[in-house]
Amino acid sequence: MTNKVLFLPGDGIGPDIIAQTERVLRRADESFSLGLEFDEAKVGGAAIDATGVPLPDDTMAKAREADGILLGAVGGPKWDALDMAVRPEKGLLGLRSGLGLFGNLRPAFLYPQLAEASSLKPEVVSGLDILIVRELTGGIYFGEPRGIQTREDGEREGFNTYRYSESEIRRIGRVAFESARQRNKKVCSIDKANVLEVTVLWREVMEELAKDYPDVELSHMYVDNAAMQLVRAPKQFDVIVTGNMFGDILSDEAAMLTGSIGMLPSAALNESKQGMYEPCHGSAPDIAGQDLANPLATILSGAMMLRYSLGYEQAADAIEKAVSDVLDQGLRTPDIHFEGTRKVGTNEMGEAVLAAL
Ligand code: ATP
Ligand code: MG
Image 1 (cartoon, protein in one colour):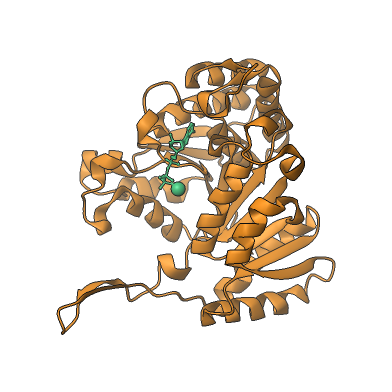
Image 2 (cartoon, protein in one colour):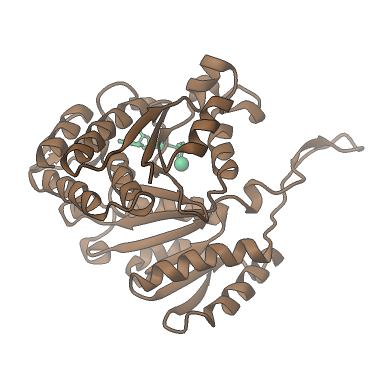
């Protein structure tokens, strides 16, 4: 075991939140004698500014070597005018596809201390604990052909291709069923099988797979209904499995049920459990560099990395406990602040997690 950890701070609040996470991981490394080796590289807009491309070869090489990658966020208005092929987001997509990170785990967990920050009534969300398993390297985000073209009649049209192969569906399905076994043994597969053929196949393959997991209950739901059910009665869900685009949208929706997108970690894993870990939120350029960002989603992503890719359950538990402790102390960044709690900045929040650890 080499234990190589690569930090990719990226853009916007990325460097702010990675700095706090790095402190926490270095402390965990010392306290638990993990023997981690840390390195850092550029991705996204920061890489474009330095090298002209969003995913330099040097970054990709370091990423391949790493056991766990911790990413901040990429993108921002500074690079929005660039051609789609060289945008910061391409760096992220390149890492995901280059490393084969097909399995995106996005927990939506409500900390009891934050129930008041949720936009839903306490009885609807208290005890909420959903795991969204999103396919990350296929579907309409990657399908070819794609583009914008001018037709013979002079009209411009844009087009993308929504495609999934049987094996792509099966491997993400397995991640969902295996995860459900560790949880409440329920998988809800989300599709649009009344309209889209690709998701008719999706539903069929999930049914076939379910035969290997007789202890797990499989149900299906159309994505429009799922979007509604998530705000109506979210606790009906345990594990949700879905494709790339539906998963993108539903996981942001589920995130908001928990009060703040600033609290939620995520993992993207490949077949050998190598993983890239990042907060669910984006680069939040509106608050970058102002000591306003909530670093907890990224710190919790670091804990997930220790657990899933490096196998340090105890250290991961300790970090999660430290986060819960600072919430108990009433410390809140502005995104999760409400009356009766104490507003702190990014740095002070990181400091408090260190102290609790
Ligand atoms: P992306 O396309 O990269 O997902 P986005 O457009 O969805 O980005 P975010 O960058 O996630 O948007 O930001 C959405 C809003 O949430 C912004 O107002 C931002 O300030 C806020 N936000 C996001 N992350 C955090 C955080 N860690 N702490 C506090 N506020 C945050
Ligand atoms: Mg987003």
